[in-house]
Length: 145
Image (cartoon, rainbow, N blue to C red; front, side):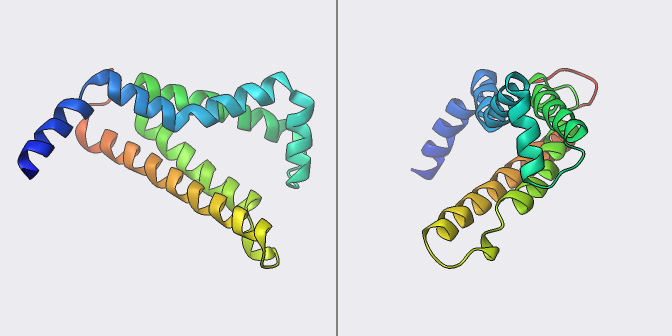
């Protein structure tokens, strides 16, 4: 029974379109975030200032660039490992900066911020797995699924 389920899972999960959609789902929030920041640049500057990142302009530009370029690297397979590890590092830094739940008093706000913190740790872990998979299983310089 387990072997039959494993065989079915391989047939369902292995096709390139499924892998692309999974990577797109993983990268979607970053692409959306970059576009929102790009089209509401004043909001992006305000966000950088809110988190104490100064001067806000270069930080906003860097975040937009990272949130656009790294997902495209992952989705196209060009430098996938590098894009994935860049987003893992960015996500870890951003979640420590933005989701400091340990500074809040016990209660609903702390609960929700802690959930967001640990969800983002999971995202960073997923990007590390994408980078690891790319480094261990694919030739670099060639396009692949």
